[in-house]
Image 1 (cartoon, rainbow, N blue to C red):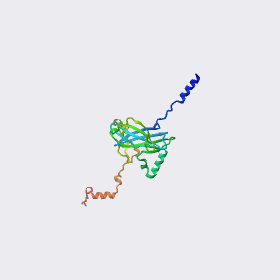
Image 2 (image 1 turned 90 degrees about the vertical axis):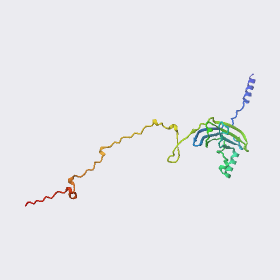
Image 3 (image 1 turned 180 degrees about the horizontal axis):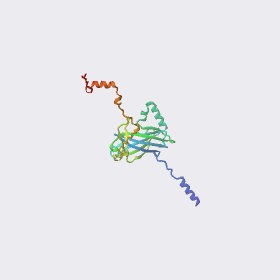
Image 4 (image 1 turned 45 degrees about the vertical axis):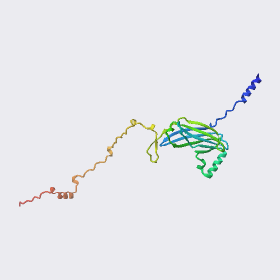
Amino acid sequence: MRTLFVLILSFMLFNVPVVQAQFGEGVSIRLNSAVLKGNALNLDMDVKIAKMQVGRYESLSLRFVLRGTGKGQTLILPSVIVNGANKRHMFERAVALHGLTAAKNGAYAVLKNDPELIQFLAYKRAVTYNSWMNNCQLLLVGELKDYNNNTIQSFTRVVQKKLSIRRSTTIPANNNGQPTTVNPSNRQPATNRQPATRQPTTVNPSNRQPAATRPPASSANPANRQNNAAANPANRRPIVINNKK
């Protein structure tokens, strides 16, 4: 009986199925903000890539997709490419021959695969706004491709089920010429504003300057007094002549 129990236990232990990690679990997305400025929708996201198994001759394509509810309401954003060793050498050769822009071929970023590292990427993109983007889905589509760019594996993940878009309010430019963004929730209502109060001005009597005083009449110059009297006929005294002898 004991031998039979040991045989059954050994069979169960050695036939437990191995659960493999699902493809795409090493990629995580964080949406920081979706802000509408004028006619442009600005998306700000963080991409984290950890321990992705990308073969030497393979590449991983990560694409963000905005999808509405109506027909034709789909917008595909530039992709993030993670290259295996051989694909990386091909990319570096293309950069040397044709430049970085041509080598990227419309991709947002091209990274080198390293299963031992955790890579972070700031994904910021501005797109032309359409009304159907309100409460649309934000999806992440991943495709693992072979040397000839044929899709081997793929996954689709919902980053945001309903995209919440915040509108930005701007006021006239500051001294640096840059517009200043104002959050309407931080504005104080007019009824709560405190009126400006004037502080009374105090004067120290000891600091007052004495008023200018005129010199007394006795101190005036006699010569000037005679000249003034001569100039004014009303001030002249009559001349009395005594005829008595």
